[in-house]
Length: 236
Image (cartoon, rainbow, N blue to C red; front, side):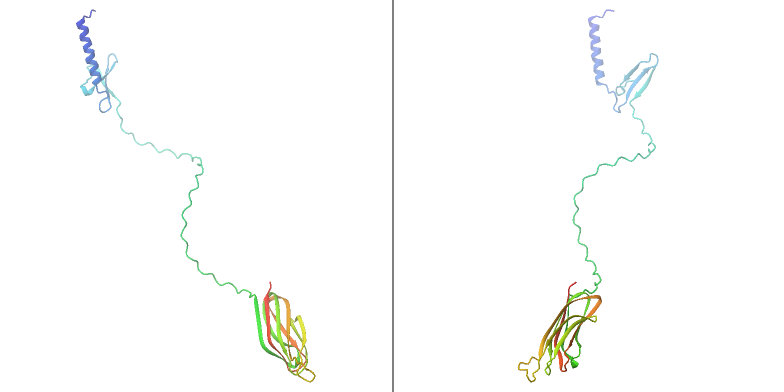
């Protein structure tokens, strides 16, 4: 078949027009759907532009695709998955602020009485009738080891006796001392009718408490002991 120059020009212009139409087509349409026509005889498929009045011909079946389907129903909840592995230990957090000071608690009950470290007894004057052994002073001390010191002034203005004094605890003598006093009688150019006596001992009180006595004797009447002091110092 011969195609003349005019026919070629017409075909070229038609191709240009068709190309321009295809470039201006709205495929897919504004809803995102692609429209097409299926030829029921030869089985060919062509795309049409519905926005430009594109229609299927007789013997063609309209088809669409790229429709968004309706939202399906929610599926059945799946079973609980296995416990995951323990994660790595996180960093230590910053120290929190210091809390407020709590209220002062109630006072506790009083404690038991403690042992005093020192005890003392004082007697201003004690007679020693007929100079017989007489307890002139005494002191009570609790359990423990004690240093006992006793001191007194021995007086007898009428006789020249030999004095003996002792410390005694639990019926046991723990220290003893002797001295003399001189009366103002004949032959005593330098009378010394009083004299000092001192006793010291460390005593152990095994029981809950004990008593320490100072016992003096002179063998003569008119005897007495004055300004008697017994001191007890707790050691252990």
